[in-house]
Image (tube, rainbow, N blue to C red; front, side, top):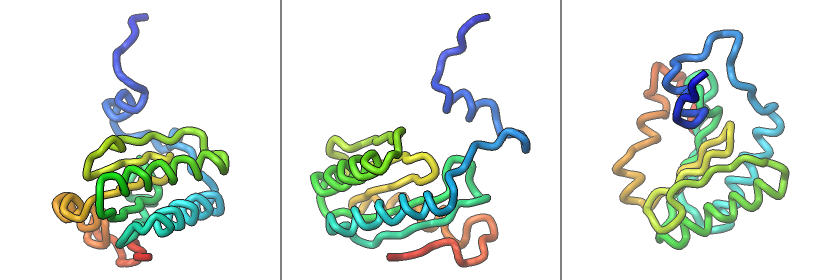
Length: 148
Protein backbone atom coordinates (compact mmCIF):
# COMPACT_ATOMS: atom_id res chain seq x y z
CA UNK A 1 0.00 0.00 0.00
CA UNK A 2 1.45 3.39 -0.98
CA UNK A 3 1.97 5.92 1.78
CA UNK A 4 -0.05 9.10 1.32
CA UNK A 5 1.85 12.32 2.13
CA UNK A 6 0.56 14.76 4.73
CA UNK A 7 -0.14 14.90 8.42
CA UNK A 8 -3.05 13.01 10.01
CA UNK A 9 -4.84 16.33 10.58
CA UNK A 10 -4.52 17.32 6.92
CA UNK A 11 -5.69 13.88 5.85
CA UNK A 12 -8.71 14.15 8.14
CA UNK A 13 -9.56 17.59 6.77
CA UNK A 14 -9.29 16.31 3.22
CA UNK A 15 -11.48 13.32 4.05
CA UNK A 16 -14.39 15.59 4.90
CA UNK A 17 -16.87 15.55 7.78
CA UNK A 18 -16.60 12.86 10.41
CA UNK A 19 -19.28 10.18 10.32
CA UNK A 20 -21.68 10.14 13.29
CA UNK A 21 -20.08 7.08 14.91
CA UNK A 22 -16.49 8.33 14.55
CA UNK A 23 -16.43 11.74 16.22
CA UNK A 24 -13.30 12.82 18.04
CA UNK A 25 -13.21 12.22 21.79
CA UNK A 26 -13.86 15.23 23.99
CA UNK A 27 -12.32 16.03 27.33
CA UNK A 28 -14.70 15.74 30.29
CA UNK A 29 -16.39 19.05 31.16
CA UNK A 30 -14.59 19.42 34.49
CA UNK A 31 -11.21 18.85 32.82
CA UNK A 32 -12.07 21.37 30.11
CA UNK A 33 -13.01 23.96 32.74
CA UNK A 34 -9.78 23.28 34.64
CA UNK A 35 -7.71 23.92 31.52
CA UNK A 36 -9.72 27.04 30.69
CA UNK A 37 -9.15 28.49 34.16
CA UNK A 38 -5.40 27.79 33.89
CA UNK A 39 -5.26 29.46 30.47
CA UNK A 40 -7.26 32.55 31.40
CA UNK A 41 -5.44 32.98 34.73
CA UNK A 42 -2.08 32.72 32.96
CA UNK A 43 -3.08 35.34 30.39
CA UNK A 44 -4.36 37.61 33.15
CA UNK A 45 -1.14 37.16 35.17
CA UNK A 46 0.84 38.19 32.08
CA UNK A 47 -1.28 41.35 31.69
CA UNK A 48 -3.13 40.13 28.63
CA UNK A 49 -6.13 42.28 27.72
CA UNK A 50 -9.68 41.67 26.49
CA UNK A 51 -9.78 37.94 27.26
CA UNK A 52 -12.72 36.27 25.52
CA UNK A 53 -13.83 32.63 25.69
CA UNK A 54 -16.09 31.38 22.89
CA UNK A 55 -18.04 28.13 23.23
CA UNK A 56 -17.68 26.14 20.00
CA UNK A 57 -19.39 22.96 21.20
CA UNK A 58 -21.55 21.63 18.39
CA UNK A 59 -20.42 24.39 16.03
CA UNK A 60 -16.86 23.35 15.18
CA UNK A 61 -15.18 19.97 14.92
CA UNK A 62 -11.67 21.17 15.74
CA UNK A 63 -12.26 22.42 19.32
CA UNK A 64 -14.86 22.97 22.03
CA UNK A 65 -13.60 26.37 23.21
CA UNK A 66 -11.69 29.27 21.70
CA UNK A 67 -9.80 31.76 23.86
CA UNK A 68 -8.83 35.12 22.36
CA UNK A 69 -6.66 37.72 24.09
CA UNK A 70 -4.62 40.80 23.22
CA UNK A 71 -1.04 41.61 24.09
CA UNK A 72 0.79 44.89 23.70
CA UNK A 73 4.08 43.69 22.18
CA UNK A 74 5.52 40.66 20.36
CA UNK A 75 7.63 39.70 23.38
CA UNK A 76 4.63 39.81 25.71
CA UNK A 77 2.61 37.60 23.37
CA UNK A 78 5.49 35.12 23.05
CA UNK A 79 5.88 35.04 26.85
CA UNK A 80 2.14 34.47 27.32
CA UNK A 81 2.32 31.52 24.90
CA UNK A 82 5.33 30.01 26.70
CA UNK A 83 3.66 30.34 30.10
CA UNK A 84 0.40 28.77 28.90
CA UNK A 85 2.28 25.89 27.29
CA UNK A 86 4.34 25.24 30.44
CA UNK A 87 1.36 25.42 32.81
CA UNK A 88 -0.74 23.06 30.71
CA UNK A 89 2.12 20.57 30.48
CA UNK A 90 2.56 20.82 34.27
CA UNK A 91 -1.03 19.61 34.79
CA UNK A 92 -0.65 16.74 32.35
CA UNK A 93 -1.84 18.01 28.98
CA UNK A 94 0.61 16.31 26.63
CA UNK A 95 0.09 17.52 23.09
CA UNK A 96 0.26 21.29 22.79
CA UNK A 97 1.14 22.89 19.46
CA UNK A 98 2.32 26.51 19.27
CA UNK A 99 2.53 28.48 16.01
CA UNK A 100 3.97 31.97 15.53
CA UNK A 101 5.70 32.34 18.91
CA UNK A 102 8.90 33.69 17.38
CA UNK A 103 7.99 37.34 17.08
CA UNK A 104 4.73 37.71 15.20
CA UNK A 105 1.57 39.63 15.98
CA UNK A 106 -0.54 36.44 16.23
CA UNK A 107 0.29 33.29 18.19
CA UNK A 108 -1.93 30.22 17.92
CA UNK A 109 -1.89 27.52 20.59
CA UNK A 110 -3.68 24.25 19.88
CA UNK A 111 -4.38 22.53 23.21
CA UNK A 112 -6.72 19.87 21.85
CA UNK A 113 -10.24 20.87 22.86
CA UNK A 114 -9.15 24.48 23.41
CA UNK A 115 -7.63 26.78 20.79
CA UNK A 116 -5.95 29.96 22.04
CA UNK A 117 -5.32 33.03 19.88
CA UNK A 118 -2.96 35.70 21.24
CA UNK A 119 -2.99 38.87 19.13
CA UNK A 120 -1.61 42.36 18.97
CA UNK A 121 -4.55 44.79 18.89
CA UNK A 122 -4.24 45.61 15.18
CA UNK A 123 -4.15 41.94 14.12
CA UNK A 124 -7.10 41.08 16.36
CA UNK A 125 -9.19 43.81 14.76
CA UNK A 126 -8.07 42.74 11.28
CA UNK A 127 -8.99 39.06 11.64
CA UNK A 128 -12.17 39.59 13.68
CA UNK A 129 -12.45 36.09 15.14
CA UNK A 130 -15.09 37.18 17.67
CA UNK A 131 -17.33 38.28 14.83
CA UNK A 132 -16.58 35.15 12.84
CA UNK A 133 -17.21 32.66 15.68
CA UNK A 134 -19.35 34.71 18.05
CA UNK A 135 -23.07 35.07 18.49
CA UNK A 136 -23.73 35.95 14.86
CA UNK A 137 -22.19 32.70 13.65
CA UNK A 138 -24.65 30.16 12.27
CA UNK A 139 -27.67 31.32 14.27
CA UNK A 140 -26.06 31.05 17.71
CA UNK A 141 -28.24 31.88 20.68
CA UNK A 142 -26.21 34.73 22.20
CA UNK A 143 -24.68 32.77 25.09
CA UNK A 144 -21.53 31.71 23.28
CA UNK A 145 -19.03 34.48 24.19
CA UNK A 146 -17.74 35.11 27.69
CA UNK A 147 -15.54 38.14 28.32
CA UNK A 148 -13.25 38.02 31.30
